[in-house]
Image 1 (spheres, one colour):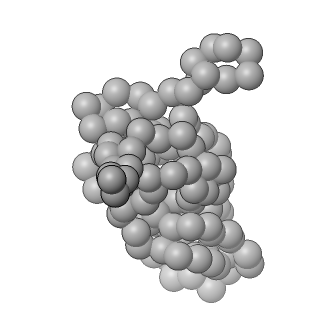
Image 2 (spheres, helix red, strand yellow; image 1 turned 30 degrees about the vertical axis):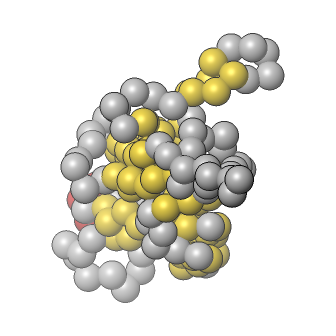
Length: 140
């Protein structure tokens, strides 16, 4: 879910300004709130996740970094949830993640998608798409 900000505390996901799909045209911070249901049998294993920002053509979104190199907008990490006490065998085990970003200089009037990969796998429903508003016309 796209939101203004998010955090995880005591296993719970706290979302502020969640559920939007249009932003801008100016730069604003954003967050991606994720709830991942891990299969019971895979809960003790370590899992790797990656989140990539792509444009409407599926190309990676990149900006010039401090060293002058183009840097793609991507975030990655690992998680291992284990099996919580009291959860019935065979149940999915949820893991919550909150990824907060500073303002990104996105092109006004553009369409973007955050794509999630877990353990090298991606699915069509593991995306969050949004649009940036065009710059308003100035009255003459």
